[in-house]
Image 1 (cartoon, one colour):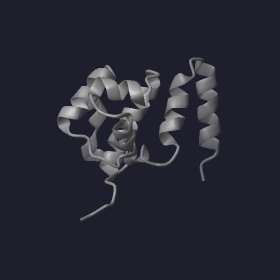
Image 2 (cartoon, one colour):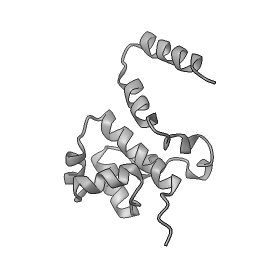
Image 3 (cartoon, one colour):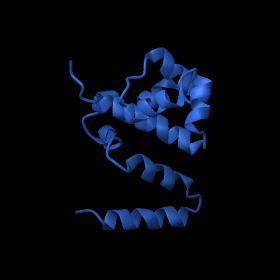
Image 4 (spheres, one colour):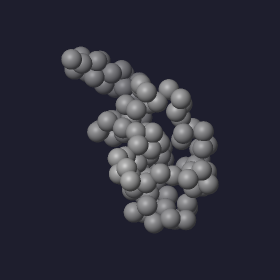
Length: 117
């Protein structure tokens, strides 16, 4: 049995987490709406457990989203989609989305681009 976490599951989980945080919904609130435990939501968000299609649609409804949006462009998951799986990316994206001032967002982008290797 292969215990490795699938990068696609990680990417889907990261999108679920980013959307949940964008809406300021707790894991417990999402879990209640989707009919699972908050521990199960934690596992989905980390990509440890694979989300079934039916459950993904339930989660999408709670997150006022679509299953397709949470799935993303999986056929291109070789590149940028898997970047969501990197540590800290979901938090950075959530923080960026929460900045309402366009000048502050632009400043953050300048800093981030300046830190590239």
